[in-house]
Length: 309
Ligand code: NAP
Image: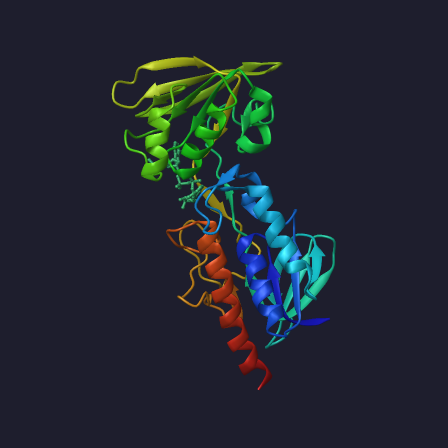
């Protein structure tokens, strides 16, 4: 079947794009690789999405987004898109990992970004045995124990705060003295008695044995001093990598692979739009993803008008 638009990814950007498209009367498929919600599913509390002054749990907001779309005739397709190619001059063909294909006049890419790996020795060996990228998913395993968090952005600060309410002690390891995360989180982190800041320091190794990791080797960058910190778990938040590899090579990206768009969310290939964390931009928030999704859908609708003319 040829859809007017296929939206790839069911996070806040994708759900919003699908909602705006279907409400405008065009045929829409939404390809979802995992449960709807994207990264907010692994976010404990969302404090900065307007309308929820007492904050909302990530999974609750994901459920609300999904429920909002549920009443509309969007084809929900479960799967992972492996490639987007040309079916002909005017249409795109999306190949899914199960061999299915979908054809579309317009493609709205909303596949977001994954947490980047740190690249430290021991990171792979102890993955799932102490090394985690999701405090909400795994934090409870470390109740009453000591853990480390690595990074200085909003994710690291927020998740260190979340973990501090569960575990005995959090060592927050960051390579610089200054944090890049929001001041409100920096202040909270500094005021939390069971968070120890280990700044100006990098992780040289994650160590352990058969039962899992048991310590992290940290090196001060100015003096070279080594400190071995005994922890049962380490949560790595050292930035994001875009999920953009399935898009055609003609779609321009920045050096890190984030998709370059104009202010209307149009990518460099006509008919391809990108919204949310996948896009090269500064602000990666639920609210900006929702805005991107609405903008991309609006631009896609103009494109479809020309397509059908
Ligand atoms: P980020 O803002 O890119 O921060 C990554 C952190 O990891 C930086 O502090 C960086 O250090 C550090 N880092 C990078 N590579 C490293 C390495 N090899 N070794 C040690 N440290 C390394 O990533 P993020 O925190 O995952 O956030 C991603 C985006 O989502 C951001 O735009 C963020 O604002 C947004 N976000 C927002 C919220 C919220 O507002 N509630 C929550 C989560 C995420 P340097 O600082 O030295 O570069």
